[in-house]
Image (cartoon, rainbow, N blue to C red):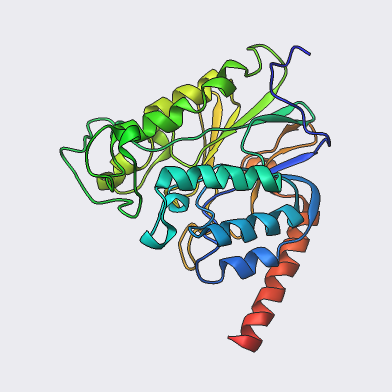
Length: 310
């Protein structure tokens, strides 16, 4: 009572970890996920770009559900790539993914997870307003042309043009109910929001020509309206861990094999009823020692598998 209308999970969890851009259909990523330890008391936040194929999305979610106590998830842009063989638009595929999550018990809605912590997934897309003095008219590059958008979403234009602002407006609008029912300001709740796309320009340090396809400023407004203490995102494959105006912003991407910012295990953001320390604070590890040792064991198994079979 008094904690808004977000539901509470039947089991209380003591640890929350986050990861993004697992791309389970690329290289050795899926085999790496198979080697993860089982952590039944840990909640995993997946900030999008899990895979493109519906079959791989399903098998990856099933695998991660076996590894973690609960999984929260928002789709990214790669999930919404479609082919002629699929016979569906990106919007139909988005709905199919939500139905899959509902069937599997993967969480795409907000919930309290125990210990005074609440998780709120935020649906999003990108516009050209994320960065100051940038507009699509200045730099117009093809991006996500593998998507297909129905005219009842965009109203006009090329159905393969993923940079139409109406697409972002549609996804942002899906968050209205969860924002309205968020915990009230002043309550002792540690709210973690997460999205696939970047919420503010301070969180993106990549090439300026890509500013128009990274995120949008409206997403930051939702983060603040939720009263978030931490926001997790993905998409750029650039690791971020910084605090801006009282909110911790975190990107922890697995990405593609060989990438500079590749993170081979998730980062801890909440544990034991309190926020986990940021990287380097007080010399404390990001993950519990138990998890570090078990993940290391998984990585060693993967290296042995490679040595024998590859």
